[in-house]
Length: 101
Image (cartoon, rainbow, N blue to C red):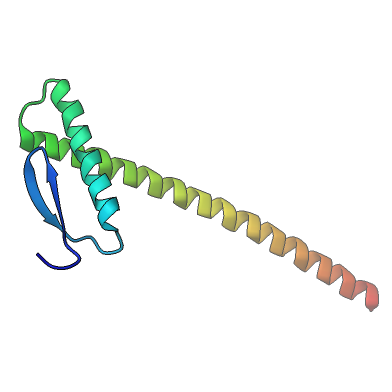
């Protein structure tokens, strides 16, 4: 196993995982979250491990997508605020220049 590869188990299935930019502790926490989601699905009557894994993957992909959308919306709002500030500053500079003419 490579130095930066982490061994995790999800529902007794061993995986050697290498995720760039993610610490071994974070990988273990993510694996635990996936396993927990799979157990929740199992409690809801879903027995097939592959289906549980796909549902869990979709659940986490949806969470990541929604977080991305929220971040994009926040960035657009910040850009709009910055544009308004720039516009006000430009108006103030123009007024200042006009008063010195």
